[in-house]
Length: 380
Image 1 (cartoon, one colour):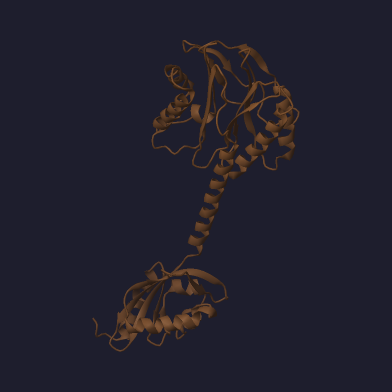
Image 2 (tube, helix red, strand yellow):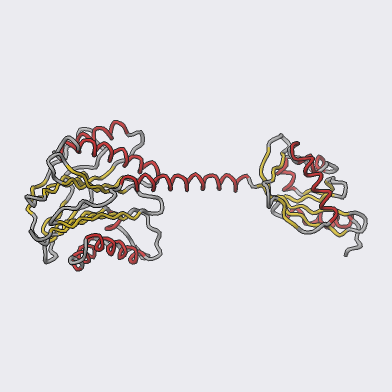
């Protein structure tokens, strides 16, 4: 086999080379192309007649030719099977003058009358484009999660007679959930939980704009309906993409032990008594924000709170989580678990709740954020 001439090798190659999925060229010891398959013709946009006898450096951008010539001479001293481009990216040149990234593997042909090289060339244009898209996607996911984390309160409020906590575990793509605690001018505690439609950077930015507007309004206003109306009018007029956000806005009067709320299309909240019974199911009182600029947002309450009550607010990422066979997690196991753990700290209860949801879904990739707020009413 080693004593065969280069022409004999080429004759054999010519019979099957077009079945190779990558571009293949054979280059003789002078650095000239002596054989190219049809994939190479298409890749370099040159016919086999144009490629034949062409110096291999002609298939490279001019700025790389002198360096490649040195590398080719070095390779002749110790020919061996090897990949090219492990240290630096390689670039090739099409017939129309356009450049494109390539991956090249070399192998010597043991011909008796010449030292020829078998080169397999792969166009990396699509791979690089895909990698760029993935990098952009990863950057957007990172940006979305960073914004989302910055919106969350640094710590829950500490109010005598109450144990308050909130948790958020983002989905793979960051679904735009949010929760917050703030103080109204009256001294009452504002409680916010929201869920924007969609995933990724855009929805999270939309949530951030809504959150900022609502917090700003709450600094001077105590009326939940007015806050939501003005926030809704602002985000509806400012939104450049079709989206909406569900918002549950509650107000806790710690001294009077009273609770009122307005819900803009948000998942129902629950007020549980000491026995674990749902004393109040806090349904939506209006439509989500950013749908109708003139919408109103009626307020429900005040609702008298009693020692041992549990106020639970969640986003639909919890209630609508599904396992591998499509079953919903639902509200019943959520409420049962919270009641069973009612003696534990609020933060622990919520962490256990989210862990339970994660076990329920198993290996299923989470498609929505898991977010919950819990207020435990203690003894006077």
